[in-house]
Amino acid sequence: MQGFLVPVWFVNAVVQATALLALAALAAWLLRSATAAARRLLWLCALALLPALPLLSWVPAPAPRLLPALPSMALSAPRAPVALPASGNVTREAIQAAFEISYRASFSRLLAGLPIRIAAMRVAAIGRRPRFDFTVFAPDTAASLAGAQTGTRPVWFEGGWRETGVWSRLSLPAGARLEGPAILEQPDSTIVVEPGFAARVDRLGNFIVEPV
Picture 1 (cartoon, helix red, strand yellow):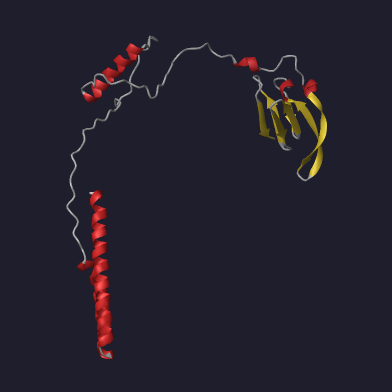
Picture 2: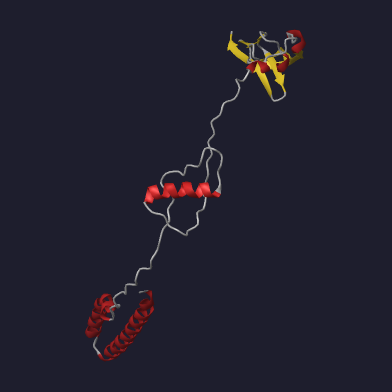
């Protein structure tokens, strides 16, 4: 249908241009030979005919032609996931066989000769491991509160400077208790215990901060 748009547009343009030239020549002749009242009447008639000019030069476009539809085929993956063998023996043949079982269940047929492409694969594993012993994180039994303190420094709390103890977090013994203010340092973090709070170390080395 698009092939007919250019000829129809061209014919309409030629017809409209010819009609405009003819009307312009006729109007010029009438204006030269007519009276003032007739010229005013001619202008009014021209203004009234302008909206109808495209309709006078309209050429109908030919009816569109319907092209025959080309055959097409869409391939879809099975609606359900393809389950592979759980034994670990996942071969090319096992994958193809599992896919064909799932595809036939979804579409009741197979498309022979078409390659199979793996777009995504998920693996889920369920196993058992030995019970994990969290006591490996317990503080050293030889640790002491006095040995864990590294010094003091002034720290700004509640509108003023306060001399604050500094401690090595990983050197605190189990059961240790610190009253705020206190600073605890470790390689990956710094913990601030503000005034009005106390901190304690449990048997696994967890550092628990609570209000006093």
